[in-house]
Structures are given as C-alpha cells and as structure tokens.
Length: 175
Image (tube, rainbow, N blue to C red; front, side, top):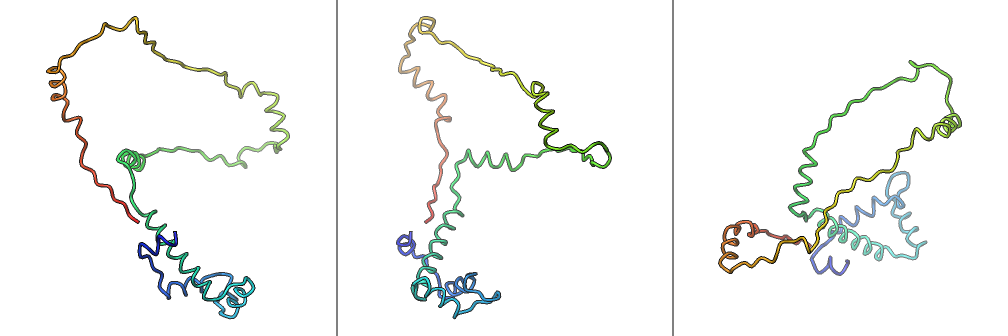
C-alpha cells in the first residue's frame, strides 16, 4: 500500500506529520506534547525520530488512500434502490411503560423465574411445522416439441427489442 500511495501521488505535509506526532497520547505529559518524552520513548523502542516521522508519514498517506476508497460510490442500481427504500421507510411504534412501584408484590429472584419456567416449559414451546409448495415437471406430460420459424423468432425479437436494451452506465474507479 505504501508503494501504491507513492505511485498515485498521495503526500503528507510536514505540518500534518508534526500534528499527528503531537497528538500521540504516549508523547504527552499532563495533556501537552513533550519532545523530550517523545525522544525518550522512541529511544526505548529502538527508533530514531526520523524513522518514526517516516512511519507516521506513510501511515497518513495510507489513510488518505483508504479514506478515498471508503468515500467512493461503488453501488449497483439494485443496492441503491434498496437503500433508498429503506431510508424512506417509516415505522410506527407504540409502547407502554409500567412503573414497578405501581404493582407491589414480593420481589422475584432469578431462581424463582427459573423454577417457574421449568414448571411451565411446555407453554413456551411451539410445535415444529413446515409449509411446503412444489410443482412437479415431468417430461412425459410436456407438450410435444414446437418448431419455430426464423420469421417468428425475428418478429418476437422485434416485439420485445426495447426490453433487451440496457441503459448506458458509467463506472468510476477512484484510486
């Protein structure tokens, strides 16, 4: 990815690199960037300041590429129609809030709930069921073979020609 970002011309300015380093929580002392703390931490990890700046620069460039891909609009017409229909859907929700203090009674613990469930388990079961629909197609019941002439094929094609044409589409590829 690093090579690809260089080939495509993604760049991170020195200011962006310095801002990213200054925002690094590990380099902060009492909420403020500390250059000596940063150098000490980098030295502990066997990194030079220049090497770390290079890593941060590469990371920022990769983020630019990833953000570009995320922001691109690759969506099929069917996906777009589905997204629009979902976006325009409305739901009506009704609910009632029953405050516990209005219904006094003995406190119920988990053991009591489990005991009640085990005693009445059959009431919470649903019998298995399946609703099947099928069609049987047998070769011996099919109509005899039909022959169609070329003129009939051409006439059928001309009649439905408009349904065979796809609208012009443009595909955008963003790198």
